Image (tube, rainbow, N blue to C red; front, side):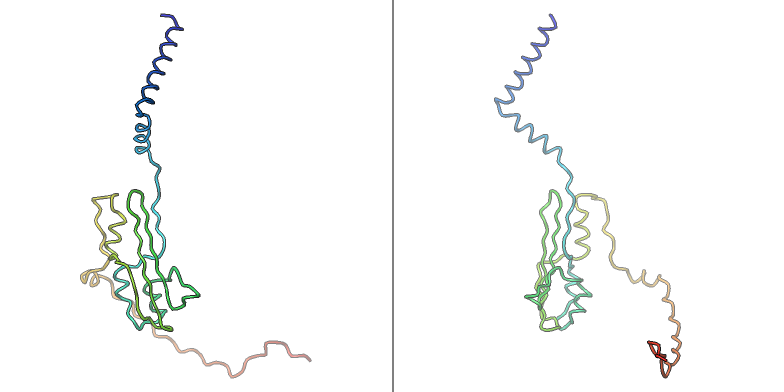
Length: 181
C-alpha cells in the first residue's frame, strides 16, 4: 500500500466516523457528558448578616436600638424612608445546592424595639454544620459553648488594681493666646 493510499484511507475513515456521529446526534450528547465532567469551580457566595436562632431569642421588645445592634450587628438595610425598620438579609450560594436566603425585619417605635419578624432561623451549630456539608463527612461539629467543667478549669480572672484618685484640677489655666504687651 502506498503512502497516498494510506492517507486517503485515514481521511475516509475519519469522515465516516464524523458523519456517523453527526447523523445520529451522539456528538451533542457526548459533548454534554464531557462538559458535565469538566465544570469550573464556583466559590461559595455569602452575603449579608447571618442571624441565628439564639440571637433572635435574645432580642426582646423594649430594648433600645443600641442593644439590638449589639446582639444582631449592624443592619444590612436601614432606609431613610423607613427609619423605624431595620432589615437583616442573608444569602448563601453554593455550587450544586439550592441557595439559602433568610430575612429578619426589626421594627422600632422611636428608640425602643416594638417587634421582630423573621424567617425560620437555624441555630449556630446547624449553620456551621451546613457550611461543611458535602465536603468532609467525617468532620465533627465543634462545640460552640463551654461546659461547666471547662469553665471551672479556666484560671481565675485577675483582680483589678484599685484606681488611684486623680490629682485635683488646677484652679486656673494659662491663657491659650499670648497676651499683647
